[in-house]
Length: 116
Image: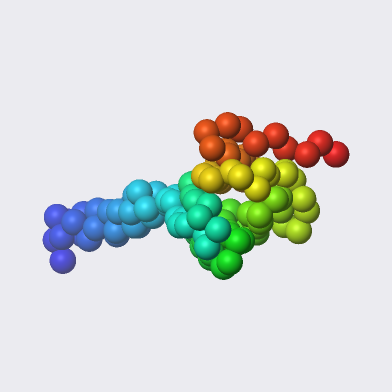
């Protein structure tokens, strides 16, 4: 085997993991959501590589960034703990997850978090 062939193989061995890393970085994060039977829209935006959104009746259950977020008719729960209240009239809910921090927007206004 020539030195040139060895160099090409070495470069290829470096290029494949780098290309894989770049692909994973490019596909991380996303959005999911829909409309509940009540007519309320729930949309989630997450920078996590995993995002699952399930809509049933008047509740949206979201799993992302190691958290379970439940948007109910009048409250929001994160990992089983009530973190915010919602107006039953709120028509559009946004859930934003960035670097593990969860924030909520209802009808274009930030939803205040419950202070402990």
